[in-house]
Length: 87
Image 1 (cartoon, one colour):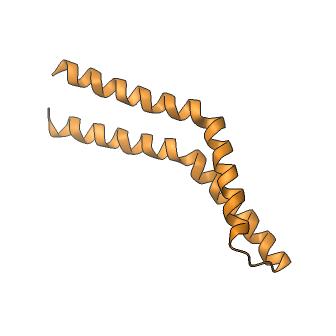
Image 2: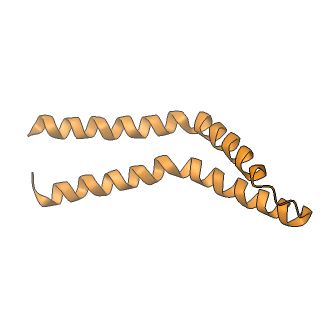
Image 3: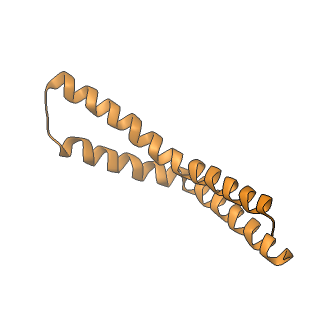
């Protein structure tokens, strides 16, 4: 296995990590900003107010995007196993 192949696998892994994590992180970011704006407008400074909606939103995002995330990870795993079999 050459250095170029290893770097290609690492690059592909990082890209897939970003793609798999982005739905949950994006939803958490949007919900966090909306809750922060709501807290600033109403002057409610309760810490748990931001935690529960983010948790629910991330759970919904994982349910909605779970098939995409699992498919991405399975494709990567299959490609790694194919590379191992060729060695």
